[in-house]
Length: 507
Image (cartoon, rainbow, N blue to C red):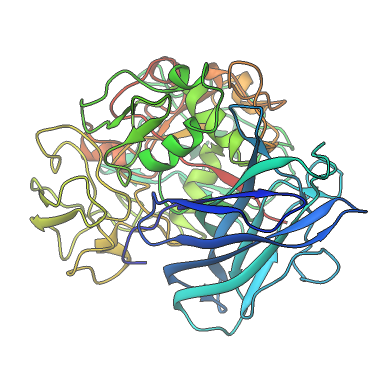
């Protein structure tokens, strides 16, 4: 887990009635690579075809003791018809994770898993990860094949299309009860979760039981000192994703390269609506390249300036969903009891000197001075550089002096930059709009105007920010801090410190 990893896009031009015609490559990745994209066996009667490719990434793992967890690649396929200027989402055959009867070709040493959340025999993407007992480190899977039901997508035999395979690195957060809350500054955080009348921290041990919110003894409660923690109401319904059930979380915050790839699949008329006009400010590097597409000159940096409409459009397009603030605490802390002043890496100590950065904006951007070798590393007000912009994802884990979870700034499960860099945009339990969220996933397809159309996703009034950011003090980085957990106004605008990442409920 000591380097940053990204998406790579391979575009292969082909006709359904011919073999490969032409091959073009656009690389936007650090070290997750998808290559040699071709199509394999085709069944014109069933109107299916296999999309074949190789994939590799570094620093992969699978732990098979204690809370077994692993990292995975979330893979999905887009295609473009020759008469259209935008890309559609491909319907993949449903995989139950066993590798048998689903039509996909599972590589040696790997597992293919996907969820079937719309009741059909289609998957909007699949997870690929290591089988139990296989070596950790760099993984390389060759001749992976995903079965595309192109007939069900309305693509007739003989049509000419372009096809693209996308990959995002994810981390499995396993089933398990956990705590929310935690102390800092010698007392319970002003806006953090508590057990009313109890010992401070609140224990969540059921995914489906409603959570009563209120100041009666034994209830989940919090204060609203600054006005942005929430309405102090409830309950949190049985259908709200609480984090007890397993889910996959993006290993890194959405990068500018990943976001640009999304933008370039939209209609030419919609692309500018999903791009911020702050190019060149605070390390935001996405701009019109002059030919109707967009380019990020520093694709490895975390993406900032994300409106809620931008983030939800991206997550719907990638067939993911937003993370809830309860899942945020589970992803950071795991099943451990809260620690005094706790940050995402599990203790209350954080670097406090300004970082010196080399190779700025490149895939090997690194910290050359003031990297903490005993405390946790994070980008925030005390360590930020003068440009007020985000760093590349995984920069702390990739340092030569990294010795483990604390210096890498990693969560309990191996997720990076959950404290600092850009804010984690989360669905809040502090408003009725947020509490109504039921965990529906995106399906890869957007509504007119390239906006999300997923039923049950809240408006901006149901969301807020967790985990701290570039220009905030160290207290905002703490897991328990909910000062802005229902601050909708910041997400109705685009700020230099607003970003996000996606999750997907596990089978």
